[in-house]
Length: 296
Image 1 (cartoon, one colour):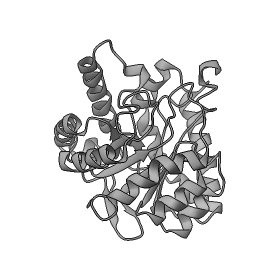
Image 2 (image 1 turned 90 degrees about the horizontal axis):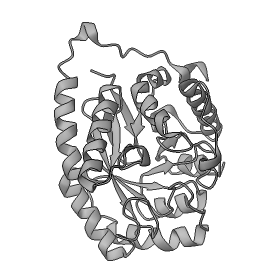
Image 3 (image 1 turned 45 degrees about the horizontal axis):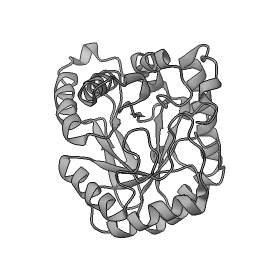
């Protein structure tokens, strides 16, 4: 079994490491690679959020700005126009916590005012250094995602040399930026950022070597769902590819998996957790050294 972590939010505590948690994706964008435009209407988004909880999502992650390759950045005003009506409808209607996928501190502030409890920062605390200060102010959760470059530049970037070492160095720097704004260890989850500036084959390498991130002594989230490196000709084949990546991610140490098809992936997670929990203690290689403490 993996080490257990207590992810402390303002009004609740989430246990990580006992079973794998599912973060259900709700995109309220017109242009996301997977379901762009499908839930842009606030009423449809509300219905989908309720559905995702009923399917077994442990966390709802709402994204209002696409980070697909080649996508363009949008203004804070436009992001708020998309996400706030959904948050208003959902306030008090879910029992699971709401995460908002944003790198903008102004969006984070409004999200917390309307009931969000977690910010999922795709930029690794690089694009808005005020963001962790807002998270600290609201005593909220923060997912720090590794991103290289920006969606506009990803196609032009060369492959990363010494992949996992490079990701670890960048995550260490992001954690330092967060600490300087008052973020505490119990607020943080890290994510290696599948697809975020990595070449196709490197995403598989990240999953295979995910266990190297255990040295941070922090819970690990990962989002393989329907990513470009898994895309197949048919939708069903893509879901099977996602299921394979989710399985490998959990077996290599992921505490949270971020997925679109919660109903199908819940079954996958339950089976993989049962297998993972059957590993004898003497074969368990999960005792980390703590990078966080070394950075104090």
